[in-house]
Length: 618
Image (cartoon, rainbow, N blue to C red):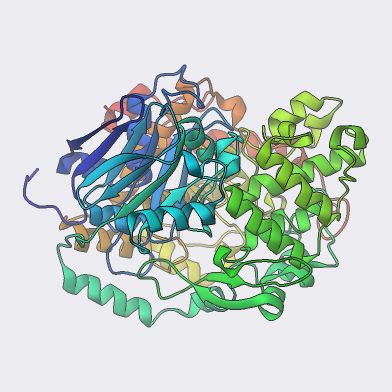
């Protein structure tokens, strides 16, 4: 491989040891970049290479990895993203999460592709990365402060209001196992408890600022992709107008809306909490990530009955469902305040809502009582109880100390049959979408290395649209399949879409933008200067999923963790799915065939030695 300048990469890694207060740099080469691409690929590589099996996720030996991709910071819609990963305090396996905003662009412009943070500071600190340098700075005065105050204080201290911050609030400081890392006040690296890893390291924030735009091999070709995108924005119109969540009424009608811990189907108040109602009642504008024309980030303002600050954006679909319908709540103002609390405390709204919904069902069944909750009537539909519980979770007080462990651990501690209705995969609470109407999506929940991930997945219902065939034909998929089918052909379709999502997460580029498989390869070629294609990119994605699989196996995971919760094998209590459930035998068959397609042992899911060698996994 050439050692000439490589478009899309700085080819520099920043390594920060907090225990020794040491900052150093390392170089990468083009072969490494081409094998692992960036983003999720770099995260998987370094975690698998550097973390032994017995690392405590909340101990100093865990490593927190921030990684941009070759497309991060390029002037192209969807490019304002990066990936964050670590060993998960919630699952014990790999955790990785993609996030937008401007943070990744600033890191790229500051001269780095990867930041690896290891060790533990003696006292609270933040990391300041700027134009080819980095320093560790004291910030004990910020410990206990929320995201907004942290951001304002650090920007003022450094004298630049364009500095971008990745930061934690009280939930991360208290090592809530599903705390997240806020990037700004409304973009979160949300899943798997990455904020707890920061808190365990006494790391309050990572501030970044850079001024050198990334090199691009073919700027004219990137310009052509920008022009193509400008003329093909129809599929993103709803996102621009409402963000996510405009289709919640249709979700409820089809059974796709989680209601009361994924148990029920009917939710009469759905029109009170969807994104359309939100815009009409409280919307004050739309915002967006770096270089993106979609501008899908909503902002809301409320004066009463609660004070909600538009600086925290507004709840997207996952939050509207998790803290709304899944908790049986149709009080939109309360959901908006809950979103703000989660942003300031740095809590993953999906896991927060799911864990509270689980606790509400426990309360309903008498497994926990007001004696356990400190007098809170933790019933479905009780918005005030939900708000109080968020505060208790973030500070690990009262019932919050139990729920801060996540729903899976809480269920084991509560016992009395609670594990029969807790909803998680590998310990990660699911995204707010219903597998009972789309078994391919259910397969994705089962086999995703980090748990029940809705983004790195196939939405069976979307791929019944003839327009989808234009994207799938280059892969040899020539016919659409029914949404409720889980055949070998559906498994192959899932694998293809899954791999595309991994490619997006490596480049790192937003999945809401309508780029095809072919265009992703073309964008990579235009940025990096490589002669690449779909086949190479799919191979990279297979390599990265296999590396993640090896990481989990090293940490004790087996095929027994690739299972859905019991709830999805039972019908909903009412609505259109009152007589519909997944077939466990068919899901298990699909899982085994997926293993086969990936080159993993069909019985155990362990990657075959020949497959590991063929994929050139070091």
